Image (spheres, helix red, strand yellow):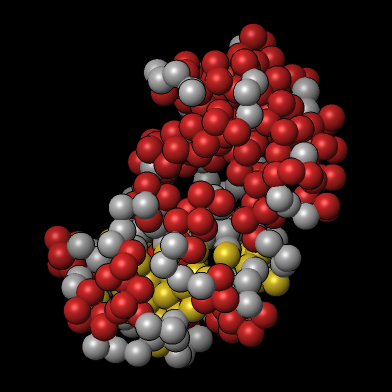
Length: 327
């Protein structure tokens, strides 16, 4: 298959290696100034809880930077491996004309982004997905330098859970097969964006509280007023999103209501105490490094939540973190 990936960042490169490993042709659409670093090859470091890191070199890909060049080829799938703010700035009309009937795979857990794409593509052409891995440019603070170096180095961790994908059955089946063929777990779900609403709502609000704690688990763990506000914000948001009028499946709504009941300051203190030992790298350092880089995206999601849910704790959390009034 001929696959185009928009974005050759830490996320896109993991997917690209996955597809190339399975024998497919991979092309990254990039900004011209990124070309030199990518042409030198990429060192991919898989982080594992057991057995140590596994390092490979990835160079089986092509690069493009002009939509006219994209239009000269026939594509089977196009993957959007970019944050939401970048997606909303894309020349979508040009992309639509350039990729023809290729499946468009979105990895942004946002109904707003899906509706943006729907202005240009039929629902049948869009496959909804969600990023189900952790990837970053090493070393994180406290990590040693990689033994091998390329033009770009990417470290990644694959959790045991499967990437959810939804949309036209035939197109989703191809996307699931692509991921599985390259060693990434994947599954067909009813609505991947709806499935992602629970974890995304919890994550975005948690990131605000963590940033207000200078990205330190121990500091947030000690801050009872902030944890109380976080729990109140999350409970209010989940109850709102669980309402049948919010257009998600019954199972997701039930999961949101159950999660809202389980949230507590005590529970967060326990989780924040064990989190530093959960992964084969510093989760604290990763969250700060990655989410400060895509902070604009977090702000967009939080603004969307505040516009949907009129909860004082949620709006105050957003205002304290981003210095803007939610309206």
